[in-house]
Image (cartoon, rainbow, N blue to C red; front, side, top):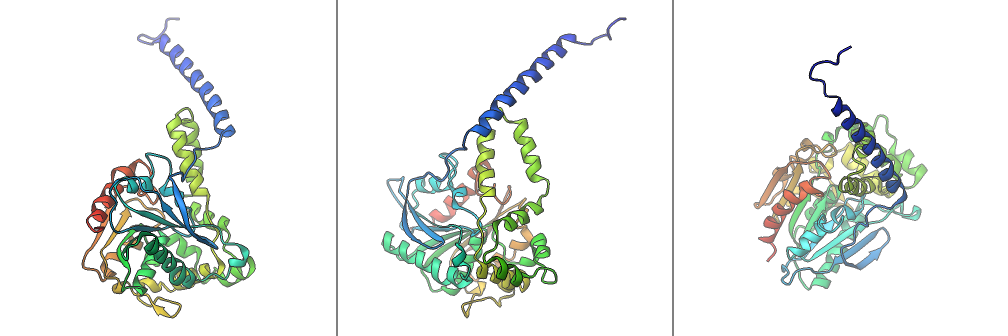
Length: 360
């Protein structure tokens, strides 16, 4: 029997050999993956300026000969650790800011202990952030402070800025920050007051368990974790891919519990009553209206954000009382907007340009 005309038997051998080599590399790299730890994260040199309970205030050491006058305080989301903004050299937002001449501080969080279940929204907005700002002022010798809030850290920064609208916040930058919680569709359904008994949950558990928070994020993209693991296996021999996967996967699963009373307030005031959007929000009896914020503000949103969709964030700029205000939509998702190759190309240069002009 004659072979089909034009059929290349040599290519079969080459393909088989290629697949065999790839399988061997998968096995070798797979063993390396499970037997080694991931890259060290959050290693940019810093000092602990202040620490109390669940809050830690860091001051990063300067990496430029000339430093802008106005220091920068980054307020992280209370569910996540700040090292997403300080991955590894060359991929660290913190390192980028330092090399561009900014004096950088960060308000980062640790897991609240069972006895800290009574922490309230006012503890974060009227105590932790103002105290951190005061410490930054004392340490830097400057009255003005620029604030950068990431995700729910942006919500806390907005509440702080609206209440303390006579200073000392000089500039406000928000990354992927929601204000219309009706448009956080899955979270709204998850926390529907008809079915979600937040009082029973918090009275029973004390703090909001991190497993429930992580599962709620996973529900937004139910197949994402499995798809990511398949993609990891397909690229297991690619050291750069594996390094990146391990960094982001570690951060994504390093979710913090939330203090019980604080979570109760988030659910009732923001998720149920949408008070920030409706201009009825109060913290510790003090009105928190976005129109009272008058400082320059930049709001960066992601085109493909599945956690904070654009409809949840789009009204921020129109509600802010500032004259100097700007929204910028960039390609990327909730995390890739601020970290990784996409952020290095898009968000970081934009922020450097915008903030540099307002930091002298």
